[in-house]
Amino acid sequence: MDLKNIKPLEDFNWDAIGKKSTRYSQEEESKLNDAYEKTFNKITEQEIVEGTIVAITDREVVVNIGFKSDGVIPASEIRYNPDIKVGDKIEVYVESQEDANGQLILSHKKARILKSWERVNQAYESQEVITGDVKSRTKGGLIVTVFDNIEAFLPGSQIDVKPIRDYDVFVGKPMEFKVVKINHEYKNVVVSHKALIEDEIEAQKAEIISKLEKGQVLEGTVKNIVSYGVFVDLGGVDGLIHITDLSWGRISHPEEIVHLDEKINVVILDFDEKANRIALGLKQLTPHPWNALDPNLKVGDKVKGKVVVVADYGAFVEIMPGVEGLIHVSEMSWSQHLRTAHDFLKVGDEVECVILTLDREDRKMSLGIKQLMPDPWLSILDKYPVGSKHTATVRNFVNFGIFVEMEEGVDGLIHISDLSWSKKIKHPAEFTKIGEKIDVVVLEVDVENRRLSLGHKQLEENPWDVFESIFTINSIHKGTVMSINDKGAVIALPYGVEGFCPTRHLEKEDKTKAKMDETLDFKVIEFSKENKKIIVSHARIAQDMIEKEKAQSEDAENKEKMSTAKATKKLADKLEKTTLGDIDALANLKEEMEKNEQ
Image 1 (cartoon, rainbow, N blue to C red):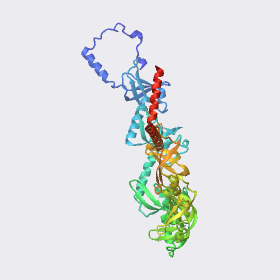
Image 2: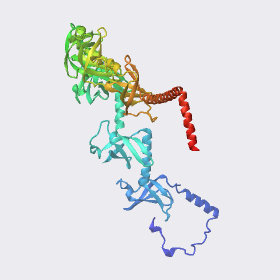
Image 3: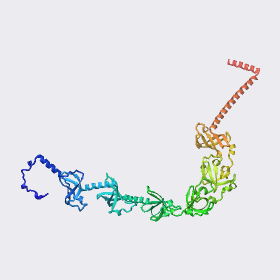
Image 4: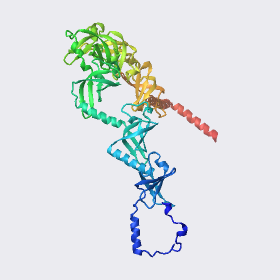
């Protein structure tokens, strides 16, 4: 505004103020107003427009956006750029066309932020590579600034393809990123530098893999060592040497063969272009040990080796580096009962064995150690004739009996029915324990099938020969109830023998049933020596008592009847012997008594 052109107050025509002008018609005035309005830009609130800086003070910046009035923004919003001056173009955000004072409200800061967010969204959609500055370190990563004023989060896992231990080395440095995530609700942006590296690596991998061939030998660097193998860097692409392809011999860990950052030659075994997987081999670069095996070695020869693996089914023995043979558990002992290789060998044992089979083409060998010992079954009939008595060791239980070891390689079976004459044994564990000694007698020898049938009860005389004379039918014995089931109860009788009492025979005189551990009298109602069975009854004793008392009562009644009959007969005999003289005397006596009464 030019202050020189303002007229002095005394020069104004104060009478004309407030009066309607008569210089223009209403139509002309309307046209003039329309023309005047067209000289201003049409603006909308909450949009970004371009303006020109017309004045700068310490506190404010005046911006002309072609509106009726100029807008004002705080000077702090342009301090990020000390080179801004009057006449420069800047973008501003229209917050309000008029405030309470009729002032146009603008914001350069909001315009910059909105423009930056538009660029962030565009970068995310197009996967554009953007540049930013690392501002500071935070928990789990870094804070970076992109597009001048947008703060984004760079996770530690997205800094590089390899783990980063020190984040501080990146603070204050510019880096390139890709926008990988935007949360519009919370205005959060996540960026990644690792994504750029991975893209480069993938491109390198595709180029390297396209040139690979099976059998090709390459030089690589040991990048990582894990329990199952070794990862080798082939110059931008990684390959894996499985632990089984590191050495012809067995190893427990890859560190026994290679070390980190070591340069090694490897051979390409296989690769998958789609999955970017490369299988490498190290041992394939050396001759196979089987090729160096003594050509004169044959079946039946004795060899020495070291046990390298032990499993339940057998043990692998290394007779030279890379050449192994299997000793099956059945070739470790002449014994026939089930055992595991762990009972005979352990890893690291030095053993001598005999070659049983040898297949050079398939590189397989089976070995045996029991062949170094004489077969005990060749002289089994001399050492263990039928009827001979021995002491054996309990080795295993089965439902039908006990497997015992007479000596190494000679096993036998004691059937459960041959353990005791008198006790009924449900399971062998009730009779003995594994590892204990037990006396046995040889019952049968089967040389062809290598089987010994043994007995334990046969060491004693058959007590049922004696029981036959003790537990006679109708004999009564004290017994204790040992167990009860639906059919009846097992009764412990004298001399360690057991009897069985059916349920209906457990009834007592008071009509209740016998209970566990109760001791009562039992009557033998059935005895079988062949089946080793005794059937007893308690109820039968009470029944016998009742029948006995009834019989005694009947006997007394019969005796009384006989006594009465005898007395009657005696009286009759006396009457028959009475004489006539006796009758006359009685008559006289009767007459005399009647007189006395009168």
